[in-house]
Every structure is written in C-alpha cells, then in structure tokens.
Image (cartoon, rainbow, N blue to C red; front, side, top):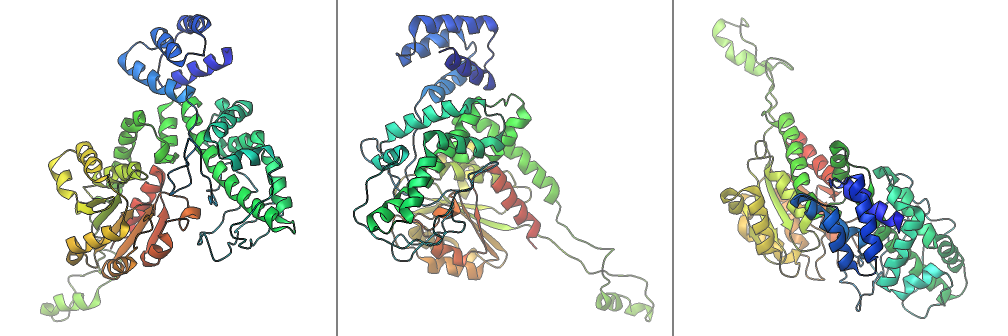
Length: 496
C-alpha cells in the first residue's frame, strides 16, 4: 500500500502538482481510513489533501484516472475489437522494432495478403523458419504455455491485469529515460511468460503435425500483437512516472512519443513545441534563395550585356539558382483512428505560413471537402477543432476522397505542386481508385504519403498502402513530431 501511494505521489509531482511532506503524510492517513476498495471514495479523499489550485486539480484528475485505471488493449489495426470486452489479436503480424534494448527475437513480417502467398520474415526469430507455409483455417492443437492460453482466450480484462502485474514485477515505475522503453517492454513480456511462449512457438513450428504448426503460427501473430500493446503501455507509464520535471527533457520526449499516446492535457505543450519547431524551419528557409555575384559565370548572358562596349567585359553575370516556395495540397484523413495525427500536421503546416503560404487543406473521412477557408477565417486552434467536428464522422473511403479531390482541384495541380497525404490507407474494403492517385502523381512535382501505422501493417486487412505507394514519390512512417519535422524540413530543403 505504501509503495502504491508513494508512486502515485511521485507521478503527481512529475505532473507539476506541488506536494509537501506534510501533505504526503495527510494522504497516507486518508488512505488508512478509506482504503483502496472504493475507487470514487479514494479519489475524493486524496483530492482534498493533495491538489490546491485549479490547474493542480485538473492534473490530479487526469493522473488519478491514468494511474488507477486498467490498461485498455488496442485491437488489431482495422478491427473494432471483440465483443464483451474481449481483445481480438487475430492476424496482427508484426510490430515496430523496439528502441534501446528491444527484443532480439522479434520477426518483422513484410506486408502481404492475408490469404494466398506465404509470408517471408525479414529477420527470423531464434530457430523459427524463414518461410511459413499457408496452412489455412482449421483445427489447432491445445495451448500449453500460460501466456499462450491468455492470448488464445482473448480476454481483455485478464490480459490487462496480467500486463499490470508484470509491469509491477518489472518495476516499470522506475523508468527514467525514453531509451529504456525497449528494455522494460522485454522485461514485462518475460514476466508474463514470454520464454515459455517462445519455446512453444518454436517447437510447434518444427512439428510434423499440421494443427500444431497452425497453432504456432497463430501464437506468433498474437505475440507480436501483445508486444505492440506492451510497448504502448510502457510509453504511457513513462509519461506518468519518469522524472520529467525538467521542461526541456519533457519536450524532447513528447517529440518522440506517438501522437496517439499523448493525452489531451499535453496538447498545450505540444502546441508550443510545434510553434518553436516551425520558427526554426522558418529561420532556415524564410528567404527565397537566389545566388548571384558568385559561383559559375553565365557566358552567353555576359557577352550579350557587354556588346555595347565592343567586346570589352565590364559587367559580369553569374548563373543563378532560385529555390522557390512550395505549392502544397494537404489531404488529411480525420477519421477517429488518425484524427490526432491530422490535428498536429495541420497545426504544423499552418505554423509555417511564412515559408509555405500556398497551403490548401482538405479533410475527409468519407466525402472530401476543402477547409482552407476555415483556416483563413478563424484562428488556428478553432479552425482545427471545426475541421475535426465537421468532417470526422462517417466511414473512411479513400477512393471517394480521391474522386472528390479530382473534381475540386485537379486543374490546379501542376509541376510545382506538392501533395501531402496523411492517413493509414484503411479503406474499409472499398474501391481504392488508385488510378486517380496515378494521375496526380503524373501531374504534380511530388506526392508524399505519411502513414502513422508501423510499416508491417501497411498491407494487412483493409489497408491499401500496397496499391497507393506505387504512385507516391515518398512514403514515410510518420507518427511523432520528430518524424513530421523531418519530412517537412526535407520538403522545404529540396523544393526548387
């Protein structure tokens, strides 16, 4: 009990809630009286003795909910989750590689169709086969490992409880720096029973019996799904527990964390970071570069302008290089799964109006509409809120969005245009209309697609990235401010 409350008070202090020693003792006394069983009573009691100002009370509410809430396991990308609170990890075949001490036995499967071709692993796990045959649906052997039983049972509550218990055993509240994320991810999975699960997957893959090999493949998929959820859990615990009272360190970690894992209370700080990042890029690229009076001599122009002097060279003319401002079309998927990414990308692009004054923005979930006027008439935050409010509803349809974009402004796209598309390319099994993207590819100078999902999921389920990437000049995984800054910085650097 003492350790739990001590960790909670430390988390509050890391979130700018000032707590004295006397207030800490009062909190211990309050917990002795009310206990932990009644969550609402515990929250009311601690809120009376710990936070003092309105800002601290708001931070306390958020921190309490995050600290004492059970972890939600996210379903496989593209799924809506199982029924009755059950997770559905089926066919989750890969996760991003872990940072700083990541799992050496991860296999990162290349995207492929769910049925048909066998998948090839880029880096096989310990002794696991490089190629897996497509065994198709059918009966599977009985699971032996405890973690395997949890994964095959699919109970979200039991998996969340096991993850929280393993997190306590691994001491995740002691995490101090972001590069420890991979190490704690590995330790938590080991505490959950990863070793026995790996052994069962390996022995099953070598078995001559088809049901056993089929079970091995299914466990392997669910293991990668679990690893992605544990990694996100460690990120959230880092934001809660790490000693980030230094503002510079906190801002640095917020640049690296997935935008989908950033809480609403951090949006103000994220906005400040974006403005500073934009100011830095503006300083680097604000002047339209025109090089003259140095470099390579322009002979023909020099001779032509000195003909009046009977061939005597009085005025020299140099070859000039002009780097112009890009003409940008931003197409943003604002459906629920990627709305946070679109919010921050639009904020970033419009913060760069000094160097990119020709930004035209389009938002869609099903039908696409231009929202440039919203940004012209309103301040930046109000415009983004209205965009998400008005266009975030509906079932995602990239094919219809491309049709609408073609009708609205195909004639405005020319060889000076850069088209930036932000979205996960999950089309709900609708018509992809990739031929329209090809037409935009042929007419424009550059098509850049920013996908917030890990590369291993780009061709899984209803994702159409395999069709769209052929008609993009640049395709990037982009799910953090650091990724976004790099992409936009390269765009400003290379336009000519």
